[in-house]
Image (tube, rainbow, N blue to C red):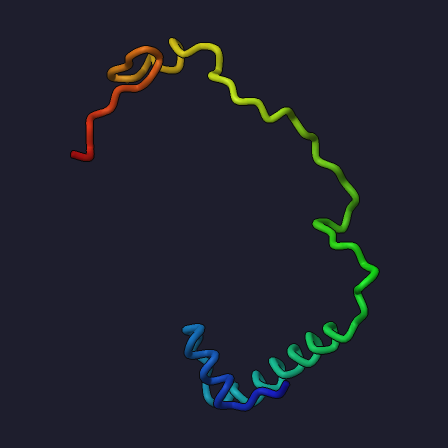
Length: 95
């Protein structure tokens, strides 16, 4: 894919980047070269390549996904302006 000066000017305008007119030709050649390399990457056969999330092999530690109340509701609600039965009391905001 090749980009012309008008397309590069439009991209720069949309990106809110000020590009002087004398820099549009070199920039269009650079961007066209980048797009050419990206098109070449699309031709690579990756059917036998497993997707990966990192270049280094690693496993993250897991913990049990257990819901708890913290075990000390009195300490949790100690700084609350108002609380009742271990819950925060807040003013009603919707009528």
